[in-house]
Image 1 (cartoon, rainbow over the protein chains, first blue to last red):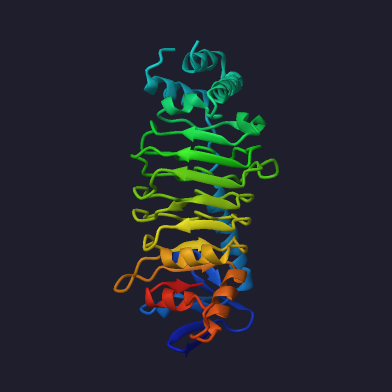
Image 2 (tube, rainbow over the protein chains, first blue to last red):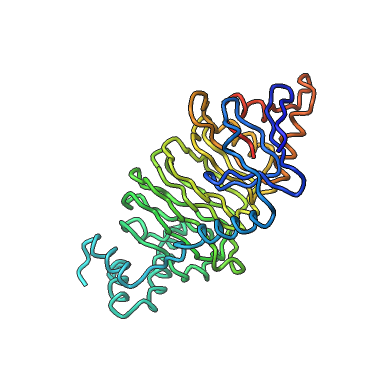
Length: 86
Length: 242
């Protein structure tokens, strides 16, 4: 990983065929421009294979639990809250 | 028979008849001149189902009677109209997954979401706008109270326009799927960040195309009147661009 300061801007660039990863924030990037007090150590290098693994994992995380659809019970509860007797 | 009574009757008969309720509410609202599904304003919680597929006029949902959560309100519901307007309850604190659509993408025509009422009290925007065909969010989004926005714009590949309340973002946010954000939208995102100096640096993640725009802007001479100073603004606010 190359760490440069260009015009007072700290820039992280991964080595060839590698990516920068901040697992805590679920971010993979090809170049990172750090905030003025940001910590360089939050970023590590990963391979393309690892990138694909993580992105698959994060995609699953994004889409799981998002398949909720209303059930009859949901409608009954909604009506009950409204005070409609069934 | 009122819409609510009709809804009750249909609930008794089973979920398959719920469509009639939506259509009845829609027709009544239309007769009133607004195209409003008038029954929605009485509801305290509800998730839509696929019945909205057939509604091609733009829809206005009055959800001002809802409780604190709008979670998954229109999740995976494909719309045949291009715009929906949602009036929020003043008490809304979560809109997790409210407008996401991972399942019925091909049929979905929805391009614009308008939100009436402040989002300033909402703490969770998780997976809220994960909608592939969505192009515009035409209300200012206030992230002031937001503590969790993971995947808020995940898969928002068509998103072009949005406005964010200045200085309201205090946590990391990702627009990594959105390559077509307008300059004004990028400007709004940058200015949407609060000054995070002295606090943990949040990460703004953008699509490679947008990042190229930001870097190209930074490369302009400071005297160039078209320069927006996006990167310098982010850095000085202790925001990391990825």
